[in-house]
Image 1 (cartoon, one colour):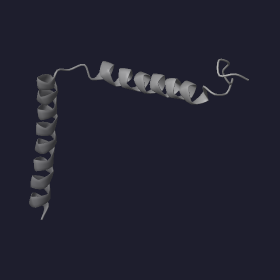
Image 2 (cartoon, helix red, strand yellow; image 1 turned 180 degrees about the horizontal axis):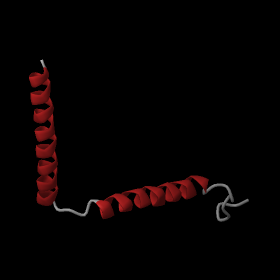
Image 3 (cartoon, helix red, strand yellow; image 1 turned 30 degrees about the horizontal axis):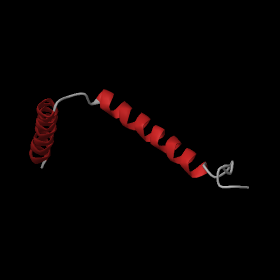
Image 4 (spheres, helix red, strand yellow; image 1 turned 180 degrees about the vertical axis):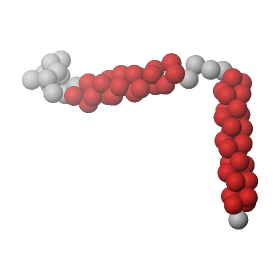
Length: 68
């Protein structure tokens, strides 16, 4: 065999690399769709969620303090 003919199994690493690249792009593409908010919108949403959690935690604390 000369250098001009390729080994049929010689490009297995390249094929695996391309398959993995495509797979990771699919994963990241899905995440982008669900999280299509800008940074400020994401901050606002997270802030509201944290305020709700804090309010619920404070209510639980006051109920526990009242039960003692």
